[in-house]
Image (cartoon, rainbow, N blue to C red; front, side, top):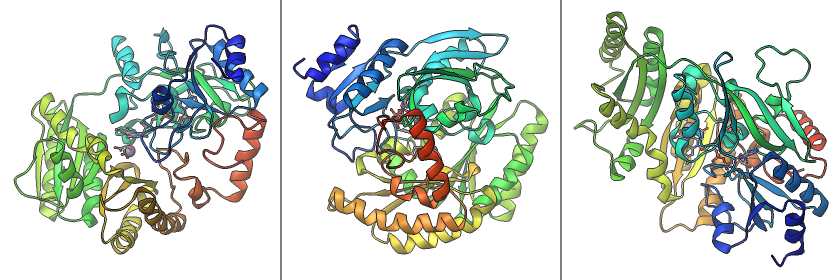
Length: 462
Ligand code: FAD
Ligand code: MLT
Ligand code: ZN
């Protein structure tokens, strides 16, 4: 190493793995947003909690900002290092540490990929139910730092619900063990929940104890074609009233168009403007009859124009691909992503208003709608035309996001339902959080990270 600061780091943690090759700096310095040019000082890959602590203490000694880094599948720029920060990757801390059959918990290192957590839980006959398409690459630490949601929130809730305890290395290098897996613990502030969704701004999650649950009952997957947006919530109501829903997701014809272009199989001969993928418990005749009754009710009302139900696991996977393949299929268009939520009861009014607003604001862009409609969470992706420059495109989209943020404020929604604020949504935090709330957040950061070195500039400016 030629940089004396890095020499000092290796002196403090002699076994620490450090990367400084330009290709590594680029790889570890960005996430899925691809909007900022990566420029970290170096990438540290600790293997132990003690090494993480040593890195944070060194950072305080040298005034170097630290960007905690998981799988870098984030969509808000939270893991971006563009200003000479040290990237602290949890990649090597990726092991399951303990399974407790009585507590039904799995304790893992924070760098463990979500899919590896699923597999480890399954080995014990249980499931970790948070799930989404980035499962193979995202890490449990990143999921905690963003309070990730996904496709099964309607049944199981967000990541927050499944964190029985976690260990945090704070901005000063102290190790806090938060909640220790307890179900009941009324002994003051639950600091674990402050860390969840803190986007690496309070410290580094190094371990987590995850709750596991029973495997779901057998399920069926149904794809529904809808004639208009207005009936979406009616269809949701009809299915939710009769079935135990495991998922209820929607997407538009534009989304389907891109997924088909990316290799998926066409589900219907006809083109329909809107689609729903829903998964629900089956297993006995009553449940199967209820599913048919929901479908027929929707057909009779004219809310659904066609439908297909999975006859095998392979067909279920094919139907899911139509929804889960959207993000990958859109990536080449550098989409400007909106990830907004309102209460389910506010959804019909919000949808009507937003559709009108975006129809006027984006007449010339390809706007792709999809999302976790059963949770009140919409993803609105605006695709960059090839002949519009990157920066110009973002400027144009930001104008519309201002209007969207105002609509969200009126409907008391959130500018980030599940992706986090990061860099992308920082300018809009005030549409969702009051000035007083943000002041309290700053105060909390000041306590846990007095030198402001943990992921500075993300979530809010200090
Ligand atoms: P990163 O991108 O590495 O980091 C995200 C944030 O967490 C950053 O602020 C980072 O600093 C911080 N961080 C990471 N690790 C730690 C740690 N150990 N301690 C402290 N802070 C840390 N998200 C959803 O919620 N629902 C979805 O359905 C969904 N689907 C997706 C599908 C695709 C194809 C892709 C690419 C992304 C999707 N995402 C989804 C977004 C993303 O996968 C999640 O936000 C995920 O939780 C990020 O995990 P990560 O390990 O990649 O985190
Ligand atoms: C999804 O629901 O597919 C994810 O949140 C990813 C995205 O919004 O692109
Ligand atoms: Zn999502």
